[in-house]
Length: 322
Image (cartoon, rainbow, N blue to C red):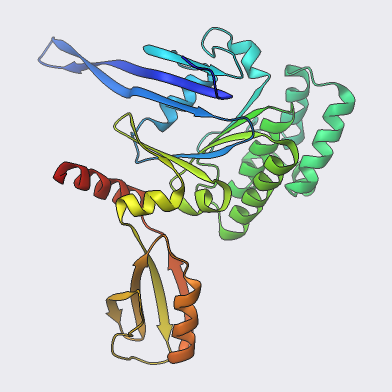
């Protein structure tokens, strides 16, 4: 194995044994391969998207990288550390945020969770106060510190979880669906903060998400996993090309009109004054919007991103044909 990455995996597998009822008293054992021979390297300071459908193996990979799970085969290192063997040492160098779970104390004020992290990670007092003040300001948590976690909205709790994961200055941050269920404003705040964190401190970020806008706005590189195997590793534009994916421009006109005609887009649906136009996902929507605004009575519009499951399904179909 060549440790040429800050995070490095080679031939990593994870197999779970599942017992299934096969009769009145009989149960049969079946091996489920959640991760199937994955190899990749992430450089220090990179922000990488790690995406795929539900059940693809994303969360299993993250759990192996944090030491929660032990690989069934292969080797992996994070900052030169074997996570499963030196989990306590690694814990001081990583931060983890699971979008659908919280590390905060549910019934206690938010600040109490931070005080616990202060003691648990043995953060020097001066550094703790400096980090806390900075995170509270950037994530706009000042009015929430004395509020019990159970009373926070999902967006507020998510920002609180991100702050908790960063108090001890981790070198690596794992984010599992960090914007799930958030409104547009909360998503923008979280993304802006992560960009600033990476630029200022060079924190290495591995991001799993179903929201391709997270990837587009934060990551220059994306890896796609499905059925436990790495299917793609490269820029997002290349993924769209490989899957021939399309974005959708939803246009509201002043009145009902025949399908609009613009270059490099096609109308796929019309309902009264609203029309849906499909165009290649790798292209900017700006020229298309400019032409529509110049030639048609435009009232409103929105852009819908391609569904990652559809992109991956098309990639599989192309491989099967070839």
